[in-house]
Image 1: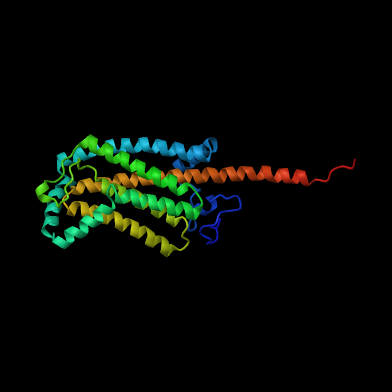
Image 2 (image 1 turned 30 degrees about the vertical axis):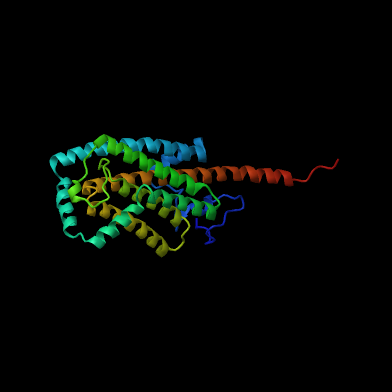
Length: 289
């Protein structure tokens, strides 16, 4: 099936934007290539669209907390064996060696964009703009769910590990005092920028446009992570773990949306034969009285 024409913000005659969100380029998101995906798609027939979306997100949130706990155990094993954690101090030392007043100011300004004030503002603005343009609550639901999951993972990780940040003497003010693992800034950057990019590319027909959107989102996430290490607010492994956790949760949210779309499409296909049968019955000539 070919993707719909490029009338980006139009809805179909039933006011349903499923048709518009179903494709990324020529890829039909309701077609599942993996065996697990096909099995999950079958379950949607029993749950229906909204129950599928809600159930998947709730289960996903429980899963991300468990994933964070697993990551905490892996982190402890890695730090004990020194592995990748052996890069923490050398990378911090390298960051300190290149600091300058103007670069400190620029890094602080950028890192604040993904902070407790900046990121919620970005999320709310994205919700308002995308919801109004699409005449749909899908952006609001997905961005909100993504943000809540990201927050839960950050809280769980910090409580489970309680890792100390680099010494204040190695950090650039303003100082932060909460536990270091994982980097909430980096995790939020991956999840929020990622889900916004996903919502955008659903309506972008040109491959070049989609590549630019993904590149901007990825560059933003990498830049935020780099500022956390540069400023001495996090260790490198804090940022690395945040990237993996954020990518995992983002994949779950996108999967939930794909299952929702699959349920909508299958429900529509099941309704069409009934509708056609009803029309044929109503069009039959009535016998003379």
